[in-house]
Image (cartoon, rainbow, N blue to C red; front, side, top):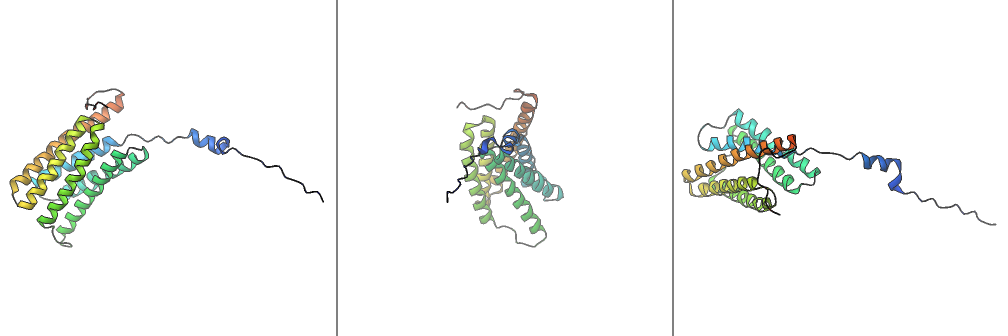
Length: 212
């Protein structure tokens, strides 16, 4: 008996209606960096005012650390992953969870659920943060000069906090906190520049692009 062969049908998946529709519906994600930098600036400034002795840990401090320093930066980091911005994704996500951890730990210490961090542990933590920020500072040399200066001051902040914790010299710790306040003020400028420049579609506030 002669068998009947069924002709093969080749379907180009690139031309199917679903594929064509998916290609047209490209997801556009807005630049989240101004949000992340504003969150960083607020949290950094208020945290270092506390270190300088302006006020003690309170509800305002905790809410700022958790939501502006933590959640806002984490959202910016996740959005940067969608935009394939590995620098922003790494920095904002890392700082975001770091701020959340600090705030939750401070709250638990206040409630006497966990013991307060000893100076040596705090020093090692700040030292490793300094290493991380220095790594990000090197990467920022492909971005903007204002960002690089901010990260230099944050590196000094973490390094001086580490030295202050190891030695117990409060003046060194306060010098680090002063560097943090400077970084926060510069962060407000960078965030405002990002927001205005994107909104107006031109350079309103310069940030100093590095030559590539």
